Amino acid sequence: MNGDPIVAVFPSRVILTKALDRIMELDYLHVRHAAIIAKAKDGEIVILDDDISPNEGAIAGGTLGAAVTAFGLVQLGALTLPGIGPIIALGTGLLAGGLVGGVTGRIAAGLIDFDYKNLQVSTLAAELEAGHPALVLDIDDSEDMLPRLREELQPYRAELVELLHEARYAVSKLAKS
Image (cartoon, rainbow, N blue to C red):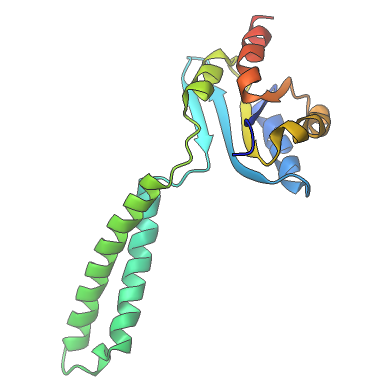
């Protein structure tokens, strides 16, 4: 990571969505990871990030494993077996490939995890005001890009655009005012 993630707090979810669309259009800004943090009126904290869940990994891995196994069996001549042999061979191969691929995908998605739910973000989320979501961006050269990003987010009424380690304290002051 080339720097601290940048946090931007917005007055509403709709404005945050429009600002995020604008950020993704910027050629000079490379967003490696992004997360949206919101606090509900009942105090529940919701963090939407760009991770792949283990279930999604299992589905993708299982599908790929089944397909690769089926194509492999066809290449090895499974269709030339007599009678219902091709159906049994392909069915067994699909099942075995899907199971192995599903387990592999689940494990891989669990291991490859960029997690915004760390202590700094949890502290920030607790300080957020309900209805004022935050956008957390992990970008290249965040300290150099911060002034440009502040300027880009001005039309979207960003209440705060700071580095993560500075934003925690600024958000608490913002919520109290």
